[in-house]
Image 1 (spheres, rainbow, N blue to C red):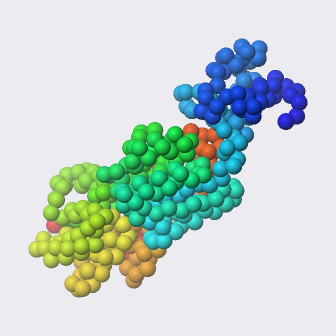
Image 2: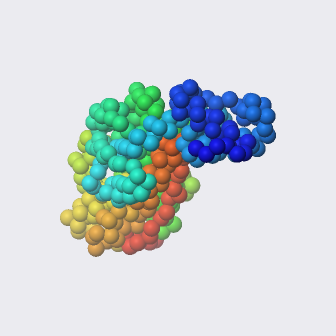
Length: 360
């Protein structure tokens, strides 16, 4: 580093020397801005200049409401590995999410290590152990079975102990202040249901995933929209499946509601995959979509436009979410931000899977 010429450079050099000569430890708190100003006989503005430079260069990091802390820049420069742990890898929306992550990590000189829990809690625990025991600086994770799991507390503690920064996608950890990037699933459930209600539907079935937070929030939005129209929640036409029984449950539920005497005129599906299963079953029963049954779903995946019936759905940002998650975890690793939180607004994509019905 060049010889200090200004007051803020003197402060910067002082704290860099402390770290380079191992006189302080990563995670140790710096004195307050007032104390630093007194020590160097400078203004707080000069102190802030120095601290902002040290943050930008990765020597320290700030935590809102707590202060500034030393980071281990040498260690961060060596650790260029970021783990990505998702519920699935090669299926549905996940290739695009992972593609966005990989592109941004590569652009910033980081390596990607990919793990897959298959939406199983035990598999996720094993993946966490592997991640913790490797030379990894950050983790992007989609929690498995998030309504009954919300990430293992012991695993989170180990990540923090090993200074592995982590951010959750699609479902947040159960800590209020954890880092996350989400889609507003409750708003999505509300928008889909409200759209059907505006088309005159009143007997609206739904099929949600019960062991993922996304399903729980989408169900909440569905109920909220019904309530605003003074419609009661009818358990008989709302299906809730879990990962372990999804295929059998979904098929049985669809057959039951399609054959019921007072058949629903519309159905809100947990995602595009479920919607396609509904469409297949309707074809078997000679039920026309959208004439006899309107269908809406989530994610705007490639499946939404893969059949002759183009789905009305809520858009998932996929690749943009991957890029954003990668940027956030890098910023966390390099000390520019503590725990970023971002929620995408639910965007309704209207296609041709719904029709208007006449109110009785």
